[in-house]
Image 1 (cartoon, helix red, strand yellow):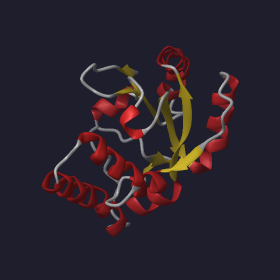
Image 2 (cartoon, helix red, strand yellow):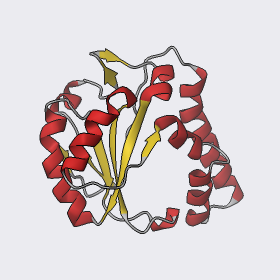
Image 3 (cartoon, rainbow, N blue to C red):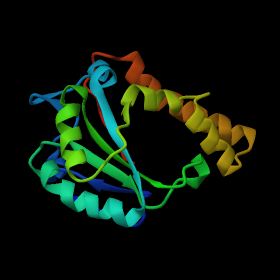
Image 4 (cartoon, rainbow, N blue to C red):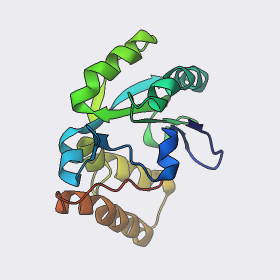
Length: 173
């Protein structure tokens, strides 16, 4: 199910059960803990223009609806404030399934093989992390607002690192 809300920076591809409370961070039918998510969860990064990513999303949607691919999100427009000139699609999965998901992607013409763990991504968005600091600079925040943004990131993401045995709870984007 493709969810294209114009108010969001991202376009999502979810299994319809997401709207009935099912999580996408599941492996073998079991919700991942924070620690498991940090150890196993990640995404294939696909770069391209928006039209091509829209086409790819439509081709991948049946794989999401069958549960082969847990979820996908991609940029509505390039994140130039983060130094990215192309739109980015993130195809999420457990690393234990990543080669199966890669075969699907490569079957639709994806050639760049770039895997990033969710742990690596979260570290980039923690205080002092390259993406968070670049985002803060791009917004022109004063020091007080920048400090509040860093604290918010520390609270949201730090909880995942600090409580590895709790079930992972994805947040709204």
